[in-house]
Image (cartoon, rainbow, N blue to C red):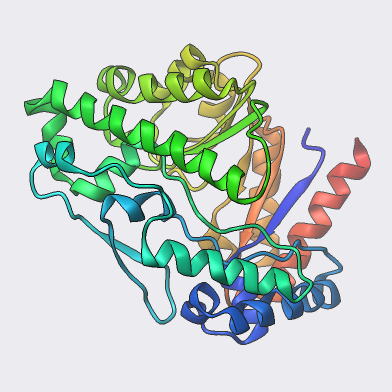
Length: 324
């Protein structure tokens, strides 16, 4: 039985509560300060919940020094446009520090500016896992490369694993901290494009290397396109927490039955349901997750989610927590 329901107020929602355009939250220090100082109080007043202030999460920081072309939307998340026309061209990439890019420097200055005003926030500089990074940089052609140029594709993934490790170390160094080997969280939404055989051949070695070189004992994976057949493979590299987010191919029964024994996992109320379902329907969805054996339930709050829906999920989560 779940011990809690983790209600996550997304950056999009916090900007919406504070009345700040999302693009400005990403890029403007004054707008970011407005969100991190105003939104937590609004959430507290409306829902009786606490949120930790932070900068808007930029998922693609690790791709900037590799030449990624980023386009910011006025009220949506940024888009990455593929920049690698031929797979072999990655061998021509110069060795660059992960922060050697104007946008990376801008995010660092924004982070410093907000902290200088007395609000403690972390740097927002996402580190995409190697396979997803490959698809973002090369586009869908990388899925063909895996078949037609498998050894070159593996070399590309190894180069992107180098980059993942370099970004991690650079972020620790910037914060004045020593890298710890306790916990690694991998975000790899596109790896589920591969069937289980190629997934084992191309994806799992990148995870294994990251875990080995960081010494991670807490090994978490977030991936949104895996199928039931992928789940048993996660144990081969010691993944001990799996977050499927809104994976359309998995059911709560799949999670309970197919993940390796001892793997922690969470189930999510579908994001669009938070916006469009009634409180009674959300309660039923929560109870479905409980009945399926989910250790915990998560619910993401996006802009325009009705207050009564947030309060309904909060109430059912508190009710089950009290039973424990």
